[in-house]
Amino acid sequence: MFKEIRNKYIRYPSIFLFLIIIFFCALQLNFLWLFGYSPSKKDVKFPTLRVGSELYTADGKLIGRYFKENRTPVNFEEISPSVIDALVATEDVRFYSHIGIDFRSLLSSSISTATGDRRGASTITQQLAKNLYRTRYNKSQGLLSKIPLMRTIIPKLKEWLTAIKLESNYSKKEIITMYLNTVSFGNNTYGIKTAARIYFDKEANELDVPESALLVGMLKGTSLYNPIKNPKNALERRNVALAQMNKYEYITSQQLAMYKTVPLKLKEGRVDAGSDGDSYLRAAVDKYLEEWCEENNYDLYEDGLKIYTTIDSKLQHHAEEAVSEQMKILQRRFYSVWGNEDPWEDSEKNKVDYPNRAMKNLPVYNLLVKKYPNNPDSVDAYFNKKKKMRIFSWK
Image 1 (cartoon, one colour):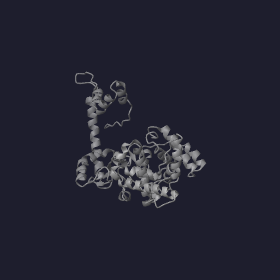
Image 2 (cartoon, one colour):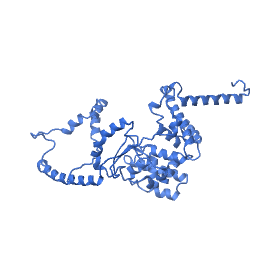
Image 3 (cartoon, one colour):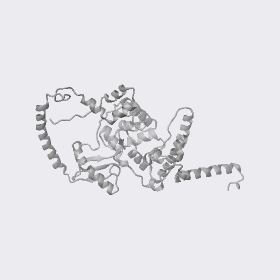
Image 4 (cartoon, helix red, strand yellow):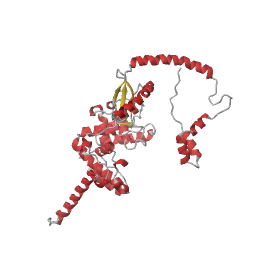
């Protein structure tokens, strides 16, 4: 076919281009199961977002949620503009001009890697492709993934291909909204709405510039830059995101100097705030819902169902208040009988090490013993770490 092209400067590039087209067709079709799953045109047009189901009272009060990924999607208009600005400035400054692949960043990243300074070149659209279609999970890998280099290259090529498809099917607003609904913010927190509620106890459209920069900064490493576990790292990373916003003129130098002095101001919240006492209500319907979902081909933890019960929240509140008053009486009786007893003594006043006995019955204890067979101090160190606990008793 190419022999008819006499000019070698045309023939060889044509052969190369033809091979590239054949390769990407084989990649998309998973030829001979070499490449693993790639999202189809239908998958791109109808993406599946794993959304937890919500349980409500008859009068619309949220009782609780069932989820694997703690996520509540939002629309573009429900996201603070400062979140969008911080994300673009920090993660993908040419987001509004590229087609899913930023060739300038790709070239820059290649040069940096060659000189020993590794930098990422993934666009927001490529990251969305990775989040939506799990391109790096084992189930998405083909036979070539057994070759170490191919295990890295092929998922990246699939992300490029999928990013171009996403760009051709969705607007930039839709892509950035989908990204902010899928991305993880650590602590089993997915999506900007849930992150705003968990870290600042507010809605996503109420986030100010420092708060937006903090959440966007976390995306580089949700554990390393977690503001609850590593506040110093989180603050430094937030200031990097603010500097990027200043560099690309989303904020002024005066604003940058002012925002850098703002402390983290975390206020931990919950998506289902106000439903603390209703866990037993969830437990009461768990089995029924799981059986119903199995019979009707739904996933309780990923299909975003809205489940309404016959419970009236006002009557439920009165019933709980009545129980609370009665339990106060029972609590006083309990203290009068057992208040002076030592909880770590048996009936014959012998000291019994109940915590140590319970610890040794835990599955994690056996795993740690196997992991550190000659180092019992490491096992003890794990259980002796201080952990926050919420202690409750009836007054």
